[in-house]
View 1 (cartoon, one colour):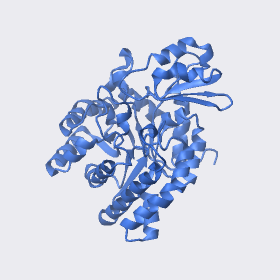
View 2 (spheres, rainbow, N blue to C red):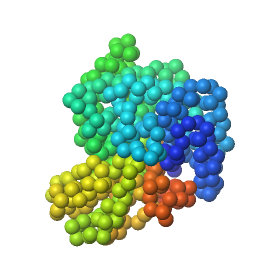
View 3 (cartoon, helix red, strand yellow):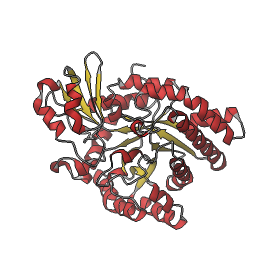
View 4 (cartoon, rainbow, N blue to C red):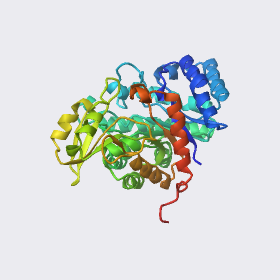
Length: 400
């Protein structure tokens, strides 16, 4: 079975003491309930924790807490550097972005830190897919982002040469971001990254072109979030192939599901149930699609009526609201994209992806009957572990 983790971004932990408390009271209990000798952890580290971990004693304390809880942090989440369980997050989840020196600086600091916290030869880190498009003006953002990523790749390559450990930074395509669809990823990898990214990487590697190209291939990849690809209404298998064919390795898969209403024009109860999920903490980009492939997109769920008014013949409407993955799809009412997510997982495994985490960070804003994050996370991991047993092994093509 693949290494399987849950993402610790569901915890309101913004410093190392609060993170250690979550490990002791939550993670250890989930592992015990599952009966697993080790629990995979997609360890979220924000800016405050990154700077705290530069102290050797603090690093040792966290490592000891991880070991005591029986946690295995083979992958890390450095997407939200600012507080992620604050009263209001919304666009702050994307700040600082990859046009900011702060984003590059804190992510560079992570390279040696994750190597001390994890025993794995290859470690993945998920990050912002460049920038959130409404936050930037002009057309130069892609080249700025590519330049910063090239510098990260060079630093990771030097670290690998010196320490023998591989750190892979995984950009996570997300609605309304610079990288949103597989087409965006392919265009970025073959355009700005192959130009500005390569130039920056070469500059930091003594103008060694072959070393720079290898650094980009080895230390930059994609975090394939199945919920996000569902929001783009992409065929997930085709999306995974398109990214890989453009040279963007799928190094990490975040398994998550979105709420969906099928045939919303004839399902007012389903639309009302989806609208009731609107809340003030997280961004819930929302999209509807017609049978012909037309899309209507709005930035948040409180604009659902506007989204549907622009596409009255929509076959389905979905929102960026990570819901429990064990919810069963329904023919009417509020359904789920979990079947689409399973197709995405199969596609990621076909491309050789071995790092997998469940990312349901929304327990605090789900319905009152679903707010037990500990039991819900336990159930999600057990549900996914059972399904993994029947899926093809990584690298195996379906039908091959």
